[in-house]
Amino acid sequence: MFKVKVYVTLKKSVLDPQGVAVKDSLNSMDYSEIEDVRIGKYMEVMVNPKERSVETVVNEICDKLLANPVMENYWYEIEEVEEA
Amino acid sequence: MFKVKVYVTLKKSVLDPQGVAVKDSLNSMDYSEIEDVRIGKYMEVMVNPKERSVETVVNEICDKLLANPVMENYWYEIEEVEEA
Image (cartoon, rainbow over all chains, first blue to last red; front, side, top):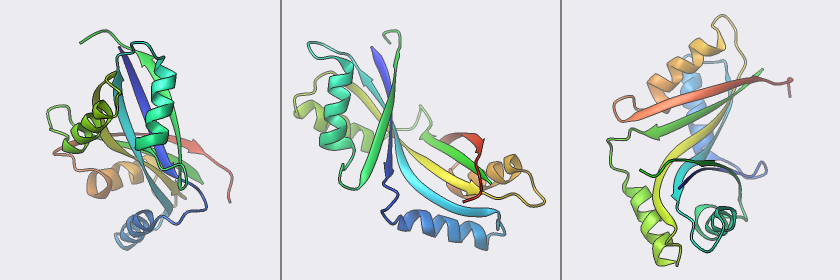
């Protein structure tokens, strides 16, 4: 069994209104130290590979479902874990 | 300037309906290898500290705004970056 940590972020050129809202909230809460916030996703996916490799499966599910390749970047880390 | 990578996940005991929906979608898309999906947040926060330390600011904003300590765990990594 593999635990795959998938990170998805908006591309730099894409406006992140949710991040802007959080930054503005923090600034108004007296945290003027905060200069920028960008919000993405962090997913933990448990994969039990059969015919296909973990990398093949993860690349495919990221491209097809977990990320939008037009607007988002993704990367991941794979770690082997013991069966639950 | 510091770039802080903040990770927020639902606690293990909390049901993650969004993760269940993604897992079910992947299984129905012929990815039977996927046994579990948990979805969290990944945030990149740029902090320019003044009187308070970066750690103090980040702990406070996580507890007050970025995470819900009742249902979520958070952790973060701090890296120093050059001024933009």
